[in-house]
Length: 273
Image (cartoon, rainbow, N blue to C red):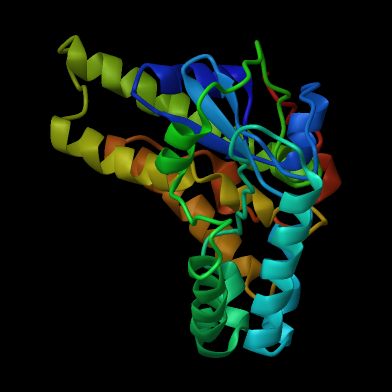
């Protein structure tokens, strides 16, 4: 997920690049051909995934023979390279969602990856690069003054904040973070009854666990598994752990399921952004 306010703090911690979806680049008004060329956002470089090719790796090639899949991907890359005219190197970004794709491949995708990288290694027109190497090889990178705020899923935030369940989950996290922030200030100022450094450290661990955005991937109508109840309970357990570590009473709402919660309870909790 990217947005300007998310991006700027990265410049202060020496974050050199981020990745985003192809549609985000288009919404930014960036002119792209079939090959995605990195655009530099101030001192941070943005790489935009080739949506179609990345999804072939994630969802299609696992059902094909490894050699046939590798040959197909290599051929598609050659087709893109041959149809784009440029005096400089072109970068094609193939990004998949962590380890999720490989569990559907025989042998976790090892044969496919060996076949594919073997073809790349033997093709003088291609070089497999890390992101840092691609930045160095790109030379002058076009600049853009802002970025369209979105996830690479449909170029919006609907899956993360679009339902009443999402709103309820974020609101509970907001409240827990506010409680942690107040306790941290009380500790720093040495107020009577303020939590200890050890208590704050324990609360922060629970807070960091609760701040993972993938919790809200599973809230709302878009996604569901047989483990929805356990997943929901674990999220609320992390948030409850913040209050417990700080010696505070956890809100009653943390004892109630969020997933498939009654609409009258969820919709009354409006976002504060």
